[in-house]
Image 1: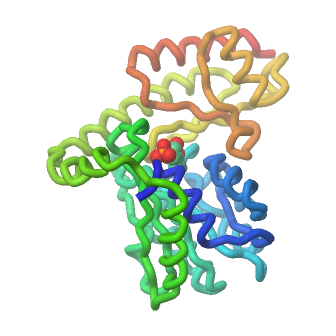
Image 2: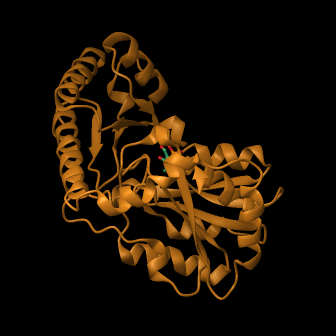
Length: 303
Ligand SMILES: Cc1ncc(COP(=O)(O)O)c(C=O)c1O
């Protein structure tokens, strides 16, 4: 058990990678991975996700980054910021890279099961009997309680490859106290007693929010929406050349905030400039108001 999934990220990277080694991380990707790696002098090597292919991993690029000092590969599925969900075939292709180079996988599945209609979420560890995997999760997203700070690491050992890793995780978990006891005690109730309809209803609601953003933002000049398949986000490409006075994605988000009081995150936060990420969780009336303002902003700044 860890203090939020953030604690799980920290422990998983800490247990698998040493100073001077490197770890492969997604671009665009959740910025905490870089921060944790950097704070431990572990080199972060960013493999590309391909927007045109529903943000699948560029497998060739991923493989080209591997050398003898690569200690782990990290994937995040469904993804923050992409809102994407990998197919089984694609997860198998990633696992084949791990298998070939004998590298363990960290699979951040904090958005497990949060996928939209027509999509199937697959836990990565169900697809391999040889690649050892640390699966990261928590209560923050599916159960909408980020403030409870509950996360976890599931150790999917294969052929006893993780014997020392298990010991290392145990040692790391003694460094600080984990999540508080009363909240841990609530977990069995949360898992067993929340009605089965809860998650499908949540996903239906989230999808309807995502579709509002998608259809409304398609009307805004200079913005290209990439339809999400799950999680809580919509990524958009900013066609910066169509604006008269916007320097980059950070400038777009900064001006949008001050002129329209709408806050979205620039892609630069996810090592992917030229894009921006919107969160789909606000109430529908707020989403409509926000998209109207984004639309007005884009029209005003158009060449
Ligand atoms: C991909 C990903 N991993 C981990 C976390 C951290 O989750 P927690 O709030 O449980 O620390 C987040 C939170 O946004 C996330 O998006």
